[in-house]
Image (tube, rainbow, N blue to C red; front, side, top):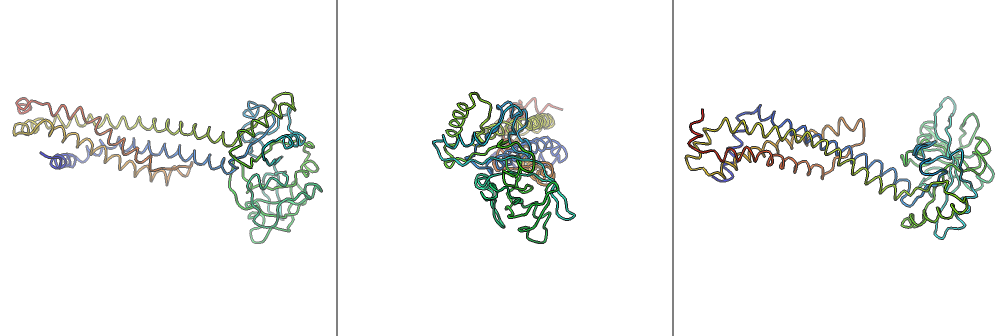
Length: 408
């Protein structure tokens, strides 16, 4: 008997017991769906985090006051959702930044930033947002493009002018039907003029310029009570991104020499990206392993049903062996039958996982089902069918014809 005959016999056996076959496949369906969806959640979360980090600049460094432990205890987001706010006992000053620039042997661009929460109002429309007090370097370092009007200039910083650049979300909220450039808005009760509108950028590193307003750095000291020359967060752009690790080391050495101690933290986006990638890959693998437990239960279900099938068809097996069927023919038929059950369940499970991810899971979290996860699921299905089908198939193949024919 060739493979085609074994395939036909296995198919007939499955179709003859439709409900039992479906219930047997149900464990595989649930297991495969769980594996694919959990891997999708892991991959989606990784892609989301990495896109936010990479959107902030692959060669960027973040300098904040306080040691790494202090920064982590304060939360990665900090005020305004950006990493590392100043500790009350430590601080980074404009003098520190000037010292870093003077002693840098590599090309860098320094962008100091302070942030605060704002109440933004125009006529009867009011919204909340983040005030970003920045220098002229902010736009280049953070990759912020001005879509309409102009950016903050050095004159704005030197003269503490009340000129601001608003984010895309702020513009569409306050000025839905007209250009915002040249218009006045009120920030915490004071009047400021809009000189530019930033292009939509999305969220990077936990914050978004879209819902923010960029003001001259000096205005924070004049009108918002910020300590003179103190910086809460500094982004340092490496002109050559491949030098980011070397620049981070140089900044650490120079600032330690100036402060006589390490009371600051330098975070490398490239290093953080590598760490996140490694951590999220581990998490995705763990999620897949958890889903694999359901697949294991489904495989045991297949083995149980196949053992029942062998018992029910003992006389049939005896007759076939008496007519000349060899052990490999019986073994092949039952292995094909268990594999068909597993593969069919796997295919249905993949369909369920794709639909579930698209219409259900995506409403709660980012998900990304990749071709590799689907191929892995298919491979799992085949492996489960063969692994858990071997024992029942061997038991059937080794039946002695005379004893099988006597079976009632």
